[in-house]
Length: 126
Image (cartoon, rainbow, N blue to C red; front, side, top):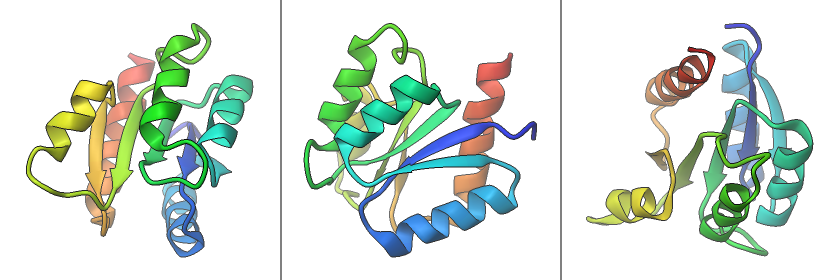
C-alpha cells in the first residue's frame, strides 16, 4: 500500500480506535470524524481515497452526508462505504440505492474490512 488515506466517520470511540488501529497497521493513513458534518468538511479539504461512513451519527446521518459529498464536484467521485449495524434484509440494497459504493456491517469482520478497503483504494489508482 502506498499510504492511501481513509476517512473514518464513526461516533463510537471504541469502534473508531479499532478502525484506526487496523487501518494504520495495514499501511493506511486515517482521518477521523465523529459527525456527518465534520466528515463533509474533512473530505472536501483532504479528498481521501476512501470514506467509511457510519449511518447513525449525532448531527446529519450518513445518508445525508453522502448526499452532500455527491453534490460537490470536489468529492463526488470519492468511494464511500456504508458502515452500519443495520443488517436487516434489504439494507444493503437501500444503501446502494442511496449512492454508497459498498456496505460493511457491524460487528466488523477485520479481514473482510481490510479486503474491502484495499479493493476500493486499488480501484481508485487504476
